[in-house]
Length: 206
Image (cartoon, rainbow, N blue to C red; front, side):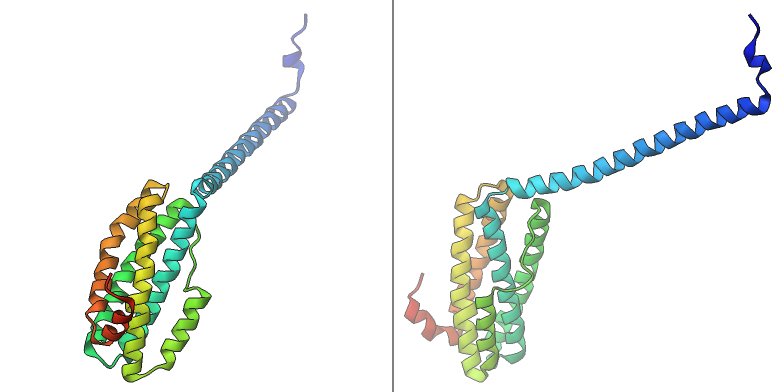
């Protein structure tokens, strides 16, 4: 039998070889693109699973904690500017620093859980901030001490106590447990403010 390969022109053989190479390269490129797309999709799917696996109660706790934290920081920044009592001003400065740190820790935790936190206080908290902003002098000191120093910290402590006992996610539970002593310390500090004494008597010592 005659050798047909030897009869095939060299240019034709080279052209065929080039076509095969191009097809191989195209197939490899498609495989790489598919792999990258699968990786990106896999990452998004894992983030979605992290969010869906977190209980509604745990998610609600994180969002409420974020709103409370924003309210504390915004009101305390206002108090640093407007408070007439040096003790109230010093307390407010401490709140800005401590709640700023808590907010960073909460944001980092929420990121790992796929939870999108509110970027500010709730509507009701914003209304209270408006009332606080309208006050001046001793009236401002008293209103800030009562609403943010006492009432807000009592509410936040109750929120964190519930999460420390009932949160299903171990990291969420650990965050709540770790943060509680600082919140309780803030309430103790607020109760010692002269402007808070009258308000605190109405609620009773807790």
